[in-house]
Amino acid sequence: MRAKRGAQLESHYIALLRTLGARKDVLGQIFTKSQNKIQDPAKLYRLIDMIDEVQWVVMGADVKGDIYEGLLEKNAEDAKSGAGQYFTPRSLIRAMVECVRPEPGKTDCRSGLRYGRFFSSRPTTF
Image 1: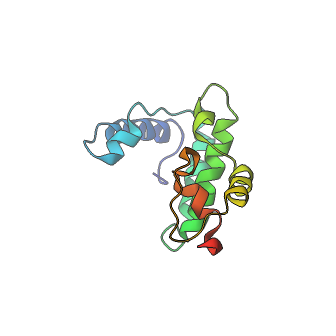
Image 2 (image 1 turned 180 degrees about the vertical axis):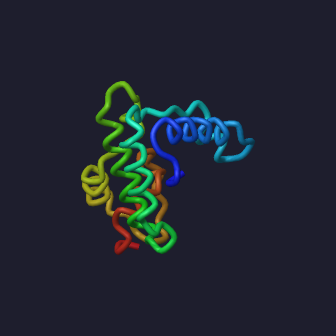
Image 3 (image 1 turned 90 degrees about the horizontal axis):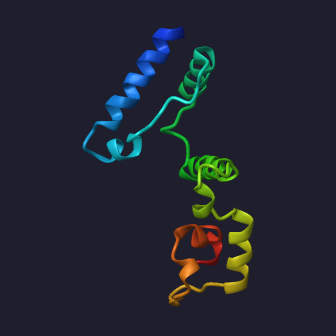
């Protein structure tokens, strides 16, 4: 994609989104109904360039998780997206973990703790 520019890049990107959305696997589910929200091909090119500069394979899972959470948080701020209902800020998670004080080998049935983010926020506890 880096070899393309302008309208050619934009057309290629839109076609790629459609192709990925038509797949019958997890990628197909992720890209179903995906749209290009970047109207300026120069910005699209810059974004692709920035993503290509990162060595994703050698990057740790914590860094990728932080990036993903940052994107969720930014998206949750947009009232139209509806993503806010799925996002719990890390500061709130830390406070909840401090209150609950989970222990190794103990079972906790509180519904708010069923998500791994609550437990992964304090790995030294376990």
